[in-house]
Length: 490
Image (cartoon, rainbow, N blue to C red; front, side, top):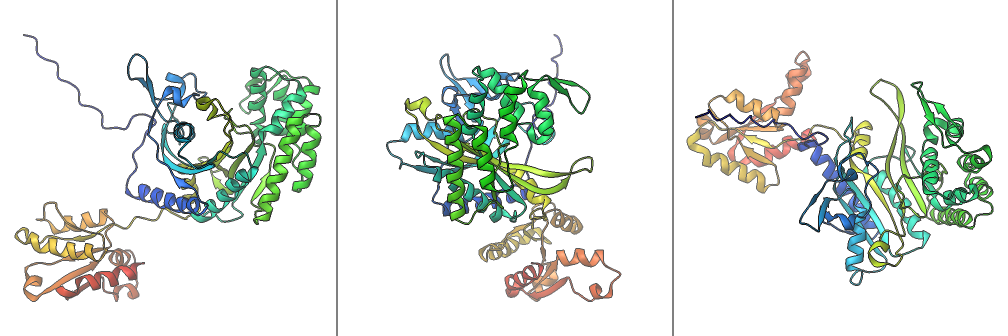
């Protein structure tokens, strides 16, 4: 009888493009999401949680990553008829929810949502296939006051989580203006329009000369490779360049330049008027161009935007992996999408919203030093005598009842040094010690681990040597002394 082949052990590693989050990272994210939710709630938005799984039919569009299975989504067949997929954003589920419950929901419906989304895209440095988004949307009103409100709320959100005024700018544009430019160019086919949109989106990277070349025959990139252009004539490219370079020294100048760029297009002029109305509404609330500016270079890649579009960019500098200075960049984006719900209802339903990239914003806060401190762990009650575990559990219960995070050491108690090493690894601020001698005298030893570490680090300084890091107190004073020590640690 042939010997059965031994099955190899599975590799202990996360799938490619996915990652694990540990205590401090999860706590930082939760704290930031609470702060964001507070701002959204203040503006009158209500929380909505949707299923992580939708039907492929409900998701509707797929991502542009057509080289990936199922065009970039994680999908599977439930039975012969139905395909299901993990949600790839929080907007498509909103469209389904509004269509399903529209008779029960207020109009307009204002909701915010937070949670993970999944994209079956090619992973890379800092590019994961599961990540968090934080959205807020208003569905059911065509008023540009809703777009202005989203922009104002985005400013308040960034400042609330720790991005100070002056370190960010919300950039505002309108797809109607861009559509007006495309109309004036006489571009009818969708492929040509998409090629122009992709070229416009590179304006920040390649500048006016680069866009001019890419709209025409093409250009050499930084590596020396030749990039084919769209193939437009100078006359056709003219409106695009006029549009992209229309940003002026103040809002009125920009709006005037945009009107000139879309002259003859009713759609384009309607878009410029909407931008002017939004700017007036924002100014009335105290949000000037120092926080929100009209910027024609903002395109937003998704094809479903139908009106105003916006993007939050962080303007402070960081060092990239090669030590070069660069701006941090975009952390949020969104806009008006008036046709998404129509897929379900057959009727146009106006909507506008914003999506914050949670991981990007967390990275920005770490760069600013707003978060990233070591998470304080629980107080650790050490075990000197296994037979007295009930005594130690009583201590930990008293600490927890006082609102102090605490735990009893549950490993092998034979080596006391290992218990303290465990407490250090847990980031414990305090260790509690009660051996047989302490029990007999009715006292406990309380070790300040934070101060102890500081004294060890600065052992040559007399001022540190004189500060006690361990205290003996009566058993009944345990909770009060722990509180006092932890208050002193900040």
